[in-house]
Image: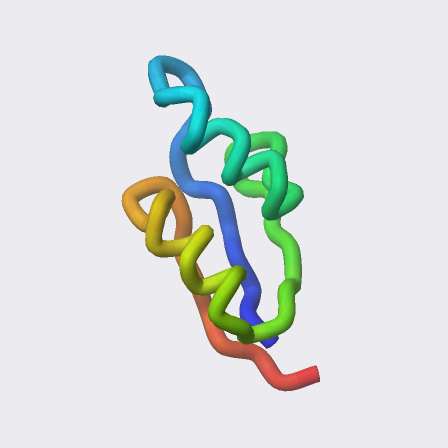
Length: 59
């Protein structure tokens, strides 16, 4: 499992990056979600890596 935390806001971002953050479930600065560690999620994290912090957590 991965814990993803939004560190910076949406303002001024391209639409693709905004939609990626919404698809991950991140809405406000400081919000966090837990997602499975798979290729799709890692690709999404890679697209917005400058906006999020990622930690590996065990269930």
